[in-house]
Length: 278
View (cartoon, rainbow, N blue to C red):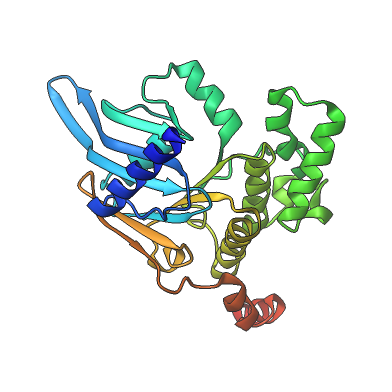
């Protein structure tokens, strides 16, 4: 009871300070406290993050925005346990991972975090099914379990009919959906997407956002989306704006844009292709 009371007090303090918008009925899956990240090159110091404090509750869909050089990628790397603070603390599901070793951080990433990047990083001569199975292979799952969960993950992104296709046989949007399935197959607590629509056309971008919104809504998956596109960020329920290594704004989205509704209003893909051919 005392621990629960202390957690509630911490959430309330951060909400009151304006450093994070976490509702009282949610636990903090992600919590950064006065995080600094300083890179050194000889005598030169680059302050990528300057005292960032941020809390993200379980089941939130948060977009992180900012111009090039703002610190948003460094913040993403911190949240994804790809980097460690120079000063400050990062609590992931209650664990202070700030002082974890490289091997310990790798273990946390494998067990708790799913990543999708602008470059899909699919193995070019490997089928969709085999690409999705890879994290399970590294995790030591049995061949039967690998097959079952990989097929479930591909079905969740609408690609059951592309199990045997290699990346060169898929569109850019389909490749990104394979990458999403691969990130989901280990059932992560947190899903981090770094510019996932940067190389995609409008329809494919909306299809990716529809998957994210559905996962967030149906599975209560905690989603962190890094983007410089305001229209993509508008699909989230909260937008955090980073500039000069600091959080400049952190606000809920009053009416998140529905990717499903926008897709339903678009002409069929075959009609779009015919128009482009003209």
